[in-house]
Amino acid sequence: GQNIDQPTEMTATEGAIVQINCTYQTSGFNGLFWYQQHAGEAPTFLSYNVLDGLEEKGRFSSFLSRSKGYSYLLLKELQMKDSASYLCAVRDGDYKLSFGAGTTVTVRA
Amino acid sequence: DAGITQSPRHKVTETGTPVTLRCHQTENHRYMYWYRQDPGHGLRLIHYSYGVKDTDKGEVSDGYSVSRSKTEDFLLTLESATSSQTSVYFCAISEGTSSYEQYFGPGTRLTVT
Image (cartoon, rainbow over the protein chains, first blue to last red):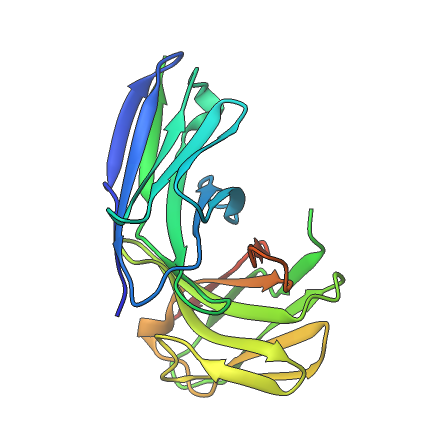
């Protein structure tokens, strides 16, 4: 089976940095995804890591360590619109994804 | 945005009635998926399709069936709805690129009373 863990909730101040950790134990590994989901909306794709290291996309960065089964999503210069759930997902074999339960980030003024 | 629509967007039905949810895509993507999302559980895969008439079960398939007779349409059927199937249902699509990243439809909120 798949085991993907991430914190349930995090709170941060506007303009600050927040790091969302994700650990996984899966039967295989073919890439790790991060999705953003605002309340009442569909998940939207943020990032994809398949090799170790940091991928940067504007204010968002994602890091992967395959040997440790660990990833994090870094959100910099937080804005109120970043208040959302962030989903970690692993592609363990072919084309299916297994999702963690999600981390709800609340940005306060 | 990927061209994915779901219908209906909201539905209230009674226990024991059949329900069919439709997912329609205009992207000609090969892979299609049905998920349910419940508080504390995240997204869980119900069924998926890897081509026309090619489908398989996900981790929570009991009580659900699917059909895909055309590339663009993927139907999810609850043969006899139960209250435990009250949930938000998302359809997703992906293509055979290196990442197989998935794009999600807007979701269907289903309530079984």
